[in-house]
Length: 566
Image (cartoon, rainbow, N blue to C red):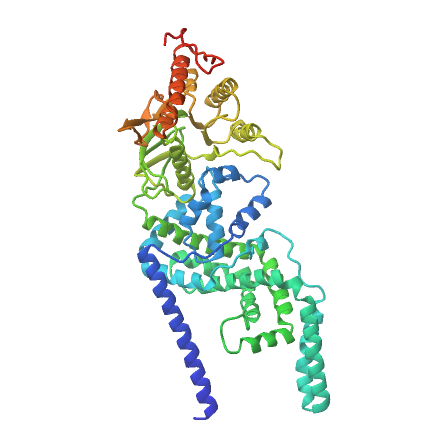
């Protein structure tokens, strides 16, 4: 056997061993993650993760979903983080969009349930998929979904010039067989010329190359998924039939762009110079963009299929490590019923059970659990309609858009005071109701940014309007007066506390009826405020409760309490 043949065989064996052991190491890591519930979190930028959602929202005339105020009120970025066991940027972007893209028609929600189930139960199949997806990996700010939203991805002008320049070194090498001198001069000149051309034009392509190489890798991942023999994966074979055949060439050009791509090999620098002097970046970039734009619809189908698959594994993984969960039931009536509901961001949550009707008013003391309760309900209402998963033992609801008005902040940039920001936030809810959209609105401390008289008056008026128009409304408030004013319109529930050994103890459980206790002054006592402060506060509070008017303080700070008989 010739030495050359021995070297070739040895090289093939070494490369084969490298790839086999690499996959074995990855598979071992993936199994550990699935069995342990812990995994390495890739540092993804939220502006990158949200790109598919933003692209989709920007390209549609009417695209609702979960708006930004609601998303922020409910800390949904943290919820997404707990769910995000995805292997690819495509999967991250798809999952982020899935959580925001509420459609009351529940389009696709039930169909995905089958996918969650068999990916959770078929270990062998899931591992094959995870291995393929993990080889694609993640890349921030690639924005690969923009290629099928009709955004402008320019092909290079005069690309034939790059092809001609790339041929010059080859022509010079051929010339060397006839004239070594002129061939060597031509080779040196063509190398120098191409280096100058490459570095003068490289900057304008850097960001696009970052994106387009990932696009090619996505298509390559789709081709590898065709090797999985399962009825659910027939879609990938179908994609690469007909028009999809045209996408296949991108895999070749993607490999060209990856030559010398910091793989850790000894020949990386040499391969990179080969790519440079033959201007392969420009030629490959142009070919990939031209192909993907031409077959935009097929690429979109492939991108979304991979995203759905990756996100489905993440949902299955999330479910695996929940203490309990249920698949929701949907009804046509305005009701919301659940048992043992938990907040998904709390480590040891207190669970609650409720049967809520069209309008609900929650009252209770500070820190008693009102806000946590309505956030738990709102978050689970989103999860129910997006990933078909609720952290409860039972859940029944009407399919609805979810909108909140909670953590209002004044805006210096917009020139809005706290109260202006608050009434703008509430107007979103009224607008959705006026548009006859099915909604469940969650309002925490309605109109707290203005004076007592106008706050209670305006709050009651808004509550009355919401009670007779479309949608369910759940409101939490400190204002006990609202329970009296809207008593016939809203079902009242409350959270309570007890005083044990001088300490305020909360059970964080919902109870029927309006709240009959306040704890703000008691908290002053617990925190050792001056006794004169707490005595005066209690006297003022008792007087107002009895006669519904405030006492005027004397100049010396004392209070005339004769009218109240105190």
